[in-house]
Length: 82
Length: 82
Image (cartoon, rainbow over all chains, first blue to last red; front, side):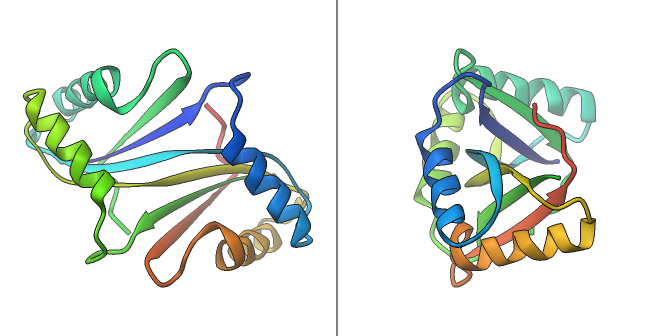
């Protein structure tokens, strides 16, 4: 089953990359605010059952994909790869 | 309006970060394949109209957020920030 994980800096955590993106966009003339940059991880899990696939991906997030102290994660199952 | 942009390496483009994630997950005992790592950018656009907001974010992607030669992007409007 295909899984997509979105890992984002938690609210209140400094995000220099997001600040740089926001500053650059404003220099280009776009009126934007609150830019934050995180990671998207697409992967194929060897598990057909949705609930068990989600459990596995949660374990991956806790152990490797995210730093739970400073990052939140969101799991989307069955997303098409673009 | 809140916008979320997913920027991913295109198919066929080398993705060393994705390879490292996949190798590490396998070492941890997870049976995964095809891991790819990209960026997620959340931002607030000063535009209430959905169609115009999307146009603006597309322009941001073309000019700054993505490298169209090697990356694809996907725009989601109105997504809640987690």
